[in-house]
Each structure stands twice: as structure tokens, then as C-alpha cells.
Image (cartoon, rainbow, N blue to C red):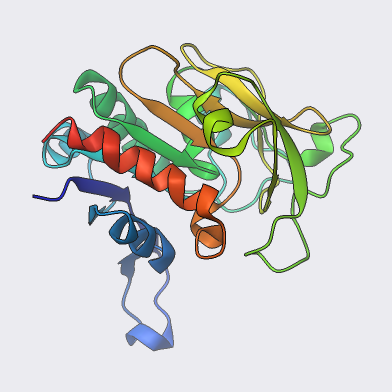
Length: 242
């Protein structure tokens, strides 16, 4: 039996012609492809009432938190800045509940981009709402080159899970304008960009297994074995819950 990986879903709140004007629950196909490639069974979890999060997590062996909109600053006690983009409080609220349920049930969590940000917020951390709040950004975090290619370098902490896969440095892609600010416990920083922004977090030697990355390995995995290895880590951890 393949381990079931719950993928946090998103929602088109306005109908488009492609779907005859209907609203749509969706996830990016590359998340699905990556999980299937490493031997997992993907299951998209649609946005729902937070009260259903515990049951949803009970149906899966691991949780993949995906990218998407900005995160409502009200979840970390701030007002929205003029630079913040579109955000979805129902998605935020449901994913916070998914994270808390996964931690209570000791299910592994792999969080990507927005996923790492909502993870930090769910555990009590805060965000920079926009790069304009950072004093001296030195790196192009919203890249203009092909999104499947790395655009900037990260420095990786030794003895981390990430270091065992990628070594001391890695070239990653970058498609975001929000960043982790105050780090929540029990997360530990395991990678930073050259301008000091947090690029990866882990929970070393703690349960549940958690890995968060600020870049998009689902866009790179086809030509980057190290990106594929991150999804494999999630699936291997999820097998322990079969």
C-alpha cells in the first residue's frame, strides 16, 4: 500500500470560462506528479471547515502544504500593509487547523513557500508582509528567469536534513515576496539566502517530522535530483504511519 499524502488544496473563488463559470478546487499538477514519482498516493484536501481538519488528517499518512496566495496578517496580529497581495482567510484558517491536527497525530509535514509561511504562523511566528519591509534585500526573491531554474544561492546549516541532500550550498528558484520574520518554536532555521532571509526550517530530533522550504522544488524536481529527494523524504516518513 502506498502512503497517502494529503495535499492542501486551493480554490478559484471566481469562475472562469474554462470551467463554465464554476468555482474550482485545485492544486498545481506538479505537486501531484512529484508525489507520484516518489511512490506516494496524492490526495487533494479541499478547503473546509476547520472542525473537519482532524478527520482529514486521520485519512492521510503525511501532509504537503502548497504555495499560493499571501497569508492574512490578522493571523499574526498585524494590519494589512499596502503591499500585501491577495489572501484567503478561509484557506489560512483551515490550513492552520490541518497543521495543528497533523502535529497532534504525529504526521510528517513538508511545507513549500506559502506552506512554510503558514506553518510558521500556525505555530506562533510572524511574517514580513512584503520585501519592502526588509532593510537591505540583496537577492531577487521574485525571479524573472524560468521558474524551473535556480536563481539564487542558499547557505545550508551543517548536520541538517537539507545538508545531507544538498551539502553546504544550493541554487534554488524563488517566487515569493513574503518572508518568515519571527520564527516559531519548535522550528529551527537550516538555510538562509545571501541577504539573510530564512529559506528552510526543520524540527531536528523531534516529532513530528517537519521540513519547510521557501523555494519551489515541485518546479525543479524534473531536472534536479535534490528536489525530488525532498519529496522522497516526506514519503519515507509517511510510510512509518501506514
